[in-house]
Structures are given as structure tokens and as C-alpha cells.
Length: 503
Image (tube, rainbow, N blue to C red; front, top):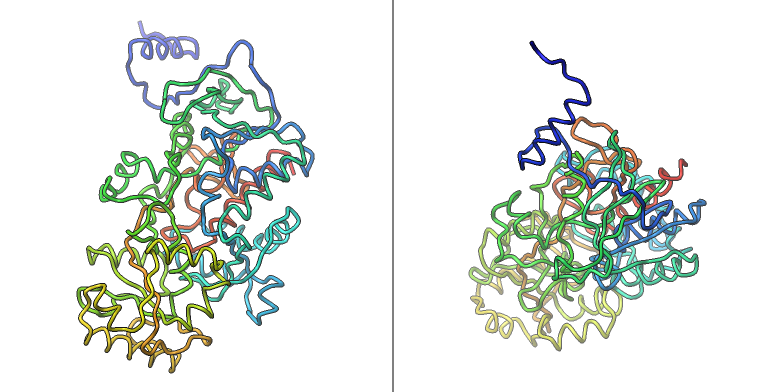
């Protein structure tokens, strides 16, 4: 006699299989709800970077008063606090003062172009349409902007740099606002699992307090209930070598990372365990502006992103240019990796002083980069060529040709964007920097809609679960344009708060 399948006997068989250590196809795994929660809040935010703090402030301002922000690390800010310190916005007052014509439509088009057709239009559109309001909101929070700069792949200068030249220029005012609003920020809290009800809705999390990074069994288990939902603002997985190699086997331990040590992707995995879908996980972006002469993110990116279009990037083995200097990150990084050894970018002192010194880098940061040997000064082209072991005759030809392109405002070789305020580099003096890519940004992550709600593998919304920032995928496609991620994180973090509040 065939036994009819009921919910009770089906769940019984699942329990038996799980007890036997067998995998049960199609069944998501989540922590079991405790008999009593240790703590209950309205909105739980995991991560203290741009997305997490933006969400916390927005949640408070729209009426969610019981907000808790947690982070597994002993300090706040994650990757956000060490980033380059600029946010993309299209059509601002600062651009207007400099005569820069820009619009949401142009930014949207740039995101789609860089994304190679893989950026989800509704997500890209949300960033483009919200970026100016987001910029104005940041000013109200206390962020101080000083200049509009250009990053490779954008049609016009639209990266709004903060006075501090690092992400701390955003994070510190946001932390101060959280303190003003009485929003608790709880560090050394490792979230292990999401807790769901029998319908798959997220109720809260199983975590460990007093966790010590690197001591993976440390901390006391605690259960936190979140009545309005949980936001994953926990970043990507650039530091998780095994995880990134699953998606891109090339990215082994030989490639360093610009990310902070905690960018290891556990919350993406925790969401997957309850059925969340992921997208574009194999699109992992390398930063083409990092230097082998320093560790981590470093100072080189601030110099390099300002130098593109003002001086040539050359292969030391040939003395020749090999790629469009103002191209997007993937174009440049792939070209350097294909060469197989560090390359060099340089520009004359006059261009450096006009474009970088005191504008895109503070005098203190510029001096530190020079003192550390990350950026080097040379009296003339021969000295530069000798130091980097470049054939001087070939480099001289390259330099003269690039100067002619600056004068003509057109590059027939690689279509590099030539800026009107650039001057011919001549025979120096020069500032130069070596380049070798590092793993920088995980383009893929959890699937979300434009309300920051996480979807499962069937395209259904997982109730009570939100995600923003680098924990998500599909927003940028195959290439993220510089400083657009800062806008992405804050905009979608704030969006998550509004969705959780029913706004």
C-alpha cells in the first residue's frame, strides 16, 4: 500500500535524513528559532560600512527607532573606511560650478556600457536617479566635499571627493550621526546563521558576541530577533581565496587584495543556506591602480586615477603604451595581467601639481607616497627609463607621441580621453608609479530588486531579508565604475531601511 505524502510525514523524513547526515535536495538550512530570544530590535543591520551606516541613519530618520548595527570586526568601517574617498553623482551643484554637463541618463548609460550588458537596468537606474539626492543627503549628514574628479570609464568628471581623501570622510560623519541618534554599533559580533520561520521568512540571527577575528570558535552564542527585518551590508569575499577561486580559479593566493581582512563573504553564504539566489559570482574585479611597492589599497590609487589621461602607461619591457589609460578597471587590469609583470604610469611635475597635488591628494598624502617610494620623482626621462630598466629610445618615442596627442586632444592609438587642462610632459621632471592589480571588488552577490529585497532561486522575495552594497550582485554587471559603488552602497542601504519601514 502506498503511503500518502503529508506535510507531517515529509518533514519527519527530512528530519530523519538530516539526523543521518544526509543532504536533502531543495531544503534550505537555517538556524532554529530559540525558545527565547536574547535580544529584540526592529531593524538589524550587519556591517558598519557605507551601506550599513547609511541604512541605520535613514531608518532612524524615517521612524524606526530600535535599530542595531553589528560587525564581526573590532573596528568600524570595513572596506568603506579605507576606500578612495569619493562618490559618484550626476548633475550636482559642484559640477555646475565647473561647467560640467551631466545627468542621470548619462550616468545610467555609462553604468550599462561598463557593465557589458550584465548590469540589471532597474538597479542601475535606481542608482542614477537617486545619486544627486544621495549626495545632498550626505552633506546633511556632515560629509565635506572638496572637488569633482574623473575616474576611468565615466563620460565626464563626476566623482565627488571628500576633504579627507579616504572613505573615513564618509564613515566618521556617519558614525557621529549614529551616535547623535543613539543608534548602537556593536562590534565583535559574528553572525553565523539566519533564523527563519517555517515559511522561510527571516526572523533574526544566531550570532556570537565577543568574537575575536581569527579565532573562529570564539564568542558566546546569542539570538537576536529583528521584527522589521535583517539587512546584509556585510561586503564581498575578496579576502576569501577559496571562495573566489570557486568562481574564478585564476585568483589564487598569489593575488593580493585591497580589502580589509574581514571581507570573507560569510553572510552571502548564510543567505544561500536559506535559499537566497546569487548572480555573477565569477565577475571579480581587479584594481588596476594598485602598486606592488605597498600593501593593501594604499596610496597609489589616489595618484594613478588622477594621472590617467595626463601621462602614458607603459610596459617596461617595450617602452610602449599598451592600453587606453582612461579605460575602465577591467580593461586596464586585464591588460596588465596579460603582460605578466608590473607596468609604469608617469606624468610631468606640472601636470601632477595641477591635477593631483593638493586637489586629489592632500600634500601630506602625496609626500607620504613619495617618501614611501610608491610614487617616485625623476629629474628627466632618461633617469626614469634607467630606473625602471626601460629602453630610453623607445620611451622617448612614446613620450613624444603622447605629448602630440595631448596637443591634438585626440589619441588615435587607444582613444584615451585627453583632458583640456593637460600640458605636454616634455622632459620632466616626472612622477611615476609601478602598477600590478589586486583583487578589489566582487561584482557578484545576492540577487536583489530595486527595493533591496533579497530573492530566492525561484525569483521570490525572502520576507524580512534585505541586502545592499558588495554583498549583492547584478547592480554593476561585469565592471564597476569608480566611485559608483559608494553611491550604490549608500543608496541601496537607505532603500532597504525605507522598504523595511513600509515606506
